[in-house]
Image (cartoon, rainbow, N blue to C red; front, side):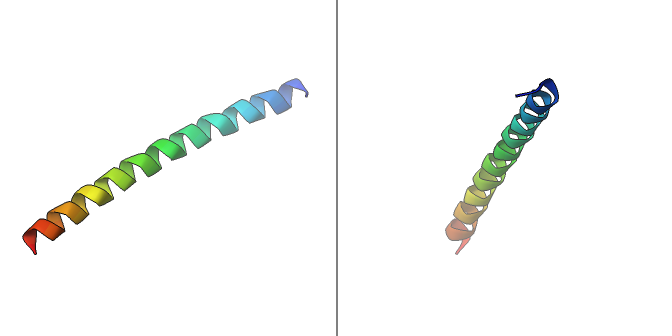
Length: 41
């Protein structure tokens, strides 16, 4: 694997990590909101 490919791979891995964090945060937020709605109903 060439140097530019390794750099690109590392950048993609960094982006994937950021996206996974966003998905986890949104999933948590969604769960909390659903719990609030259920308690109000």
